[in-house]
Image (cartoon, rainbow, N blue to C red; front, side, top):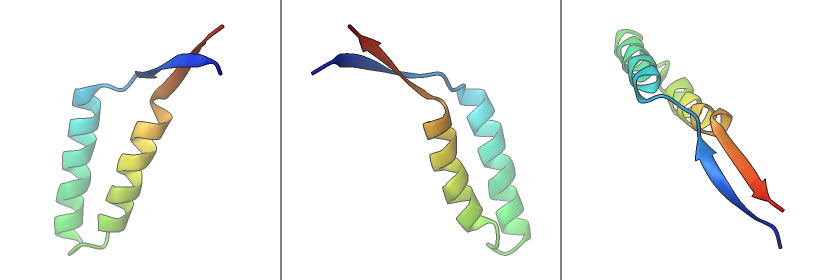
Length: 55
């Protein structure tokens, strides 16, 4: 079995500002954007993960 490291390449401030923006937008639209907010959170984390495999 190969071993590897999981590396997160995301940025806290990038995530925080986009999250706050989507949260405000969901309040303005009375919660219509809320499902997209949950989807976007998962997509952000998955897109910014890398697996470094050691041989």
